[in-house]
Image (tube, rainbow, N blue to C red; front, top):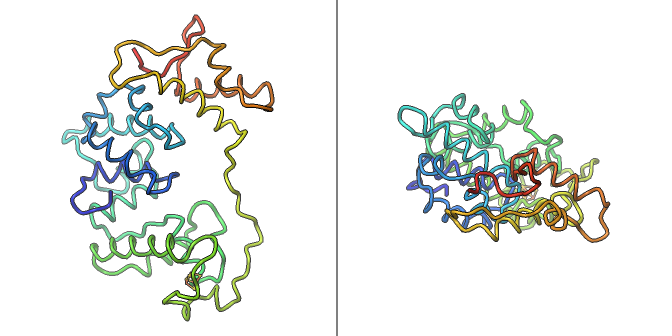
Length: 282
Ligand code: SF4
């Protein structure tokens, strides 16, 4: 996805998919998407239902709808190409500072730091003796530090960003970092300080019993019945949709709440008769 032969569109799709999903899980989905929708024009013409079906089990499916909206915006540009400036990228649906930076670095070889969770963790450990970043979004201080380390050349910057990402994912892991075999252990402020534990505990994202799990169950039922390019709608009655959303031992109000949220997020539509289907599944 970040290889030199991949198009800017392919990189954008891969970066959005990997925002909240590990790269190995993303790979087969990305390959399928690139076959189906190799340019923004093809995805812009796809139905939201097909897009949600092909998003499958990647999680946080609103990202699929944002990607389609992004494709529509790009396809409407005079050249129908992914823009190459930070400002233009950041106004695209589903594209934030991280995705814009990754695209600029890996595709356009801009001299820019890509601050993903792995890189941020490495930098705060090595330079600030902290176990992990204190905030969910990079601070100005973090960005200044990352910028100050960048090589002069754009291609070297892309390699630097990729190398730091890999280093954080494989060696300087969140849990059990391999400090014993780390080539920069002598430079690492966190290790020299005795690896102090962050005072605020890491919030792990629960799944079992959550609204996310219940939402996933409703979407899974609708996805399973919807073939790509299907000419007929796959519909559930309201009662069937609520049944799909109902988790064992859950708050009885959860299923109603989940269904309402799915409609509000545009992930399903409910007609006047209470029939429920994927958006644009005609
Ligand atoms: S010594 Fe440990 S914490 Fe420091 S950079 Fe290496 S792996 Fe990460």
